[in-house]
Image (cartoon, rainbow, N blue to C red; front, side, top):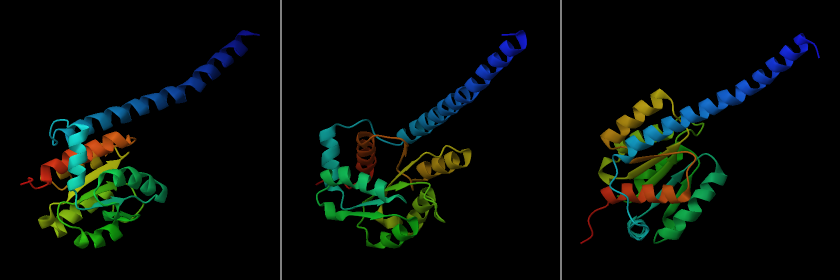
Length: 196
């Protein structure tokens, strides 16, 4: 092999590594952004709670609304939630935010809403949260947002929602069922009325 061929092989090898290095850097950046945004959201929640306490909080929830544009994800989300609420019939699922918003008037106070952010609809989950707070502030609904979104515009609106109280917690995707259930319970603990 001549010197030119050796250089070409070397260049091809470096070029073929560049995208994977770039992909790895992008993944790290997304992970760091999700972690810092999640930490900001976690500051609005109480200390960690035990699984037993979380189960007790779940039993106090009058209803749960799940919002995601993917029916398979809705089914996957509904299953673990149904183990912990008093009545699985109180779990309502919606595959678009407009339908979810229309149903809000039927939700009892202190219900939990767990929503995706990017749903390919005219309204994102974060907009749904803001609109629910506008139309039904007296219900003290508990709004949990989950998403892959890490844009600056999203983070700015998320931080505003957390500070103004129309978003109670944020869970970055991907997540585990355990993290989702625990985060929801911690957020609900703050808004549910004290048991007498």
